[in-house]
Image 1 (cartoon, rainbow, N blue to C red):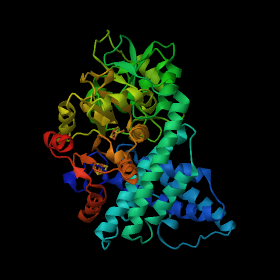
Image 2: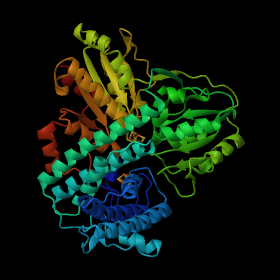
Image 3: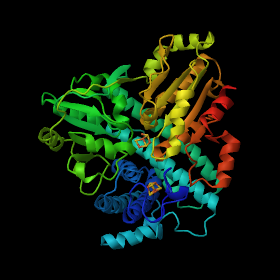
Image 4: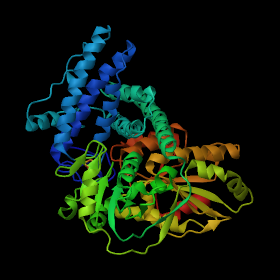
Length: 541
Ligand code: SF4
Ligand code: SF3
């Protein structure tokens, strides 16, 4: 196997025996083979559009299949075997339609004509022949850009899938995902790939806009909400991942059953949505970010539902209490495929739950675009009268690396006259610190999940509008942490908006070659994080 798509990749170079994430070499090969098959499907989808064939099943499958290959989403070989076979069946049906409509279908060789082998072992061997290193003669910069584009597409497909679940879609998003995947099969040059990577950023913004519309259209605009970190005596279910619809359905199905529902990880911002917070049994938040789940899930006395990334190999102690839904999968873990959470509820009722109330502190969430723009006048006044000197967007993924302490220390050292906007699971490095207020505005504003990066972009654009300047001219600095491919897509979005001077850590992507990094530095002045003191000094002077 060879995989270097995430930040924790082995030795900062690539996982080649087993994933640091726990991905086996077999699953790595099956993910590579699925991506290979989806590229073949994309070739026909691109040709189909030229002759008026646009197939909804193909579009939705493309997003779901690509999302499955994201870090920490699906570790189940059987699910990948099913997806590979489904992909080829859909591809063959699409090919027939495109042919009948007079479109091009005479592709020879490669993923366009790939036939999946009969056995798991033989499929793994097919996957091994179609991985990142399958073309040893490729120019390293072309490979780097192709992988940058592929990971951006993976993040975009994930957001498009999240949006689809809430009924939001735009054919421009599907068309681009397929165009980009098909383009990786051709012989694109550096300029074309750079252009596609930046277009991926634009399209990802659209996918995130759709997701924002899905979330706020279904559950209302988040409002500032105090979330307890303690627990209530009684039966309990913990929901992790990012999917609001799963949480909404679960809350409906647990009503009146004497079960308290808790959020974990990226589900924390769900407490701010009116149509979710209306359920009195959505009690509080339990635990921190994904990499701490084996300790936190182990100690949780109820059932656990994992709705999206990031799942880790469950410990034996809670393997029978955890369930997956949607694209998530882990061998031996029960999967809910039909939105019916009865097995999760049954498990929660069998388990002891919390024996007594547990006191805890509380945190605030719900500072998404609607809320922040609602106090724009106060914020602008505070900047003008110098009560607020600077804004920091300290946002992105968390992870296990010790270097991620940078973000805790950075947040702690941000001067008292500055405001921190945050989003995604990296916030758990500092989310429960009391940072006080400036003129009634909390100094720490939780904009939401990584899925809410659209909201942060809207806030930045609105501030720029209010100050009559560009986003790069605002007293705003972005200090980002990345881990997986949703973060790659968000980074491409920020670059496509022309945003410069982003500080990125804890380490730079292994898939970015020195020459590609030079381009990013020259065009966008991307910087690796240094120490909190050095970076604060450089930013604030
Ligand atoms: Fe390694 Fe990350 Fe790939 Fe897992 S997803 S195999 S940790 S690079
Ligand atoms: Fe986190 Fe997986 Fe990226 Fe959603 S939960 S931000 S890492």
